[in-house]
Image 1: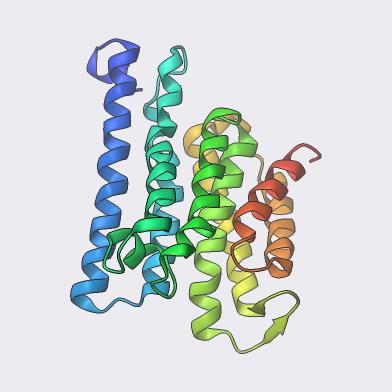
Image 2: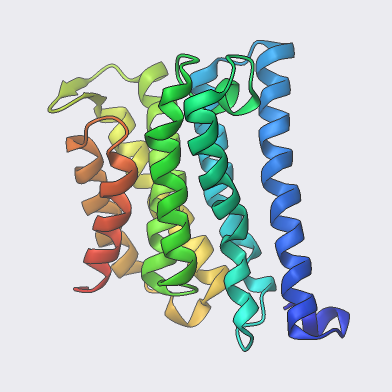
Length: 234
């Protein structure tokens, strides 16, 4: 906790941790925009890197003092982006940073789908499921599993299948591997006493199946709901 490390009050420590989340997220978006506009990074790839990076914001949770109400400031950056995504989804220009880095095709209306669902999930996980096993696993399965699956699947996937949208066996396996490994790491980092590898294994398997059945964009809702639901039973 920053308050203990720096010898300041819990409020000040939590405020400083929140400032770090703002620097991290806005820095990530700016970096991805630079990579797209200057170095030709494909928009679909920048979108998923942003997706993974944004979900990894939970790495800052150990910095928060849980004994003060200001621990919930951890979601402030996501509340800001909730407002920004709605505004940009309706009014942004095609050269807007968010449009460049968070959409597949450069259509600003995409911001009102997957990215918006993502920040809503992050807000719920940072409040109702603050520093709990279900909240952490929901974010890691969504960010890392669903983030890496299309990167690998669309570029290296040879065994294709389609239920409600195009998927590949390689992408689904990637979903499982990254959801499993990332969940182990982040649970160990944030609440090590709750680490249960068998439990995480089951959740990663089920979310892999759900991702395989999910239409595009809606998986940003279905994956975390599944992770939270399964956490209640295993």
